[in-house]
Image (spheres, rainbow, N blue to C red):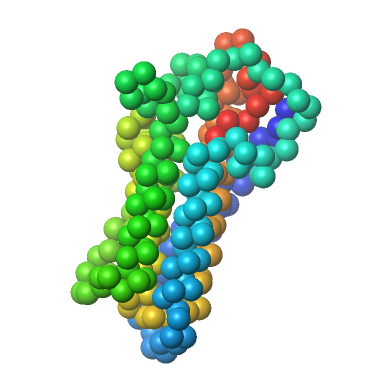
Length: 232
């Protein structure tokens, strides 16, 4: 059986994530003087962000492979429990999936996939110089911050609401990064934002792992799934 994430870990991750987000908001709302540097900054930062997005898209398409990077299973037991949307076909997980015609999809992964692809296209257009953000940057940072905060609350949402909150997460990160780049054009600040985005992703994984473990631990129905798998 894979080891569950302790409840303290996601709480600590959320606290650190909010501290990092607060630092970004403080910098944007009270901008210090910063020098613009590196003529190829936009290209490098755009590539870095797209690599992060591609990794997230891969994780959304192959959540089982991704989860094995962070968690190790003990043994090779296979659960006979029916799986839908890579979750057990169980009433306890009914809010974790969406049903589109005859297909059952993981709401979170579907949202992250759509949001990740959208964020890649928008960031590529921005860092390639196809458009600028103008005077809307401060408002866009605040909107992006909401996208980050909302994804931490997505575990309490149902179905399509969960999908939408997860979809807005990578778009929110993109809005923060592009707005900060537009404001300051500083390489090190851009790298800091990208590092925060990676940490926000890991925080979301920790919250999801803890939530799913808690869901299974409270379930009284007979099930071999919780004895052999960790869901994401």
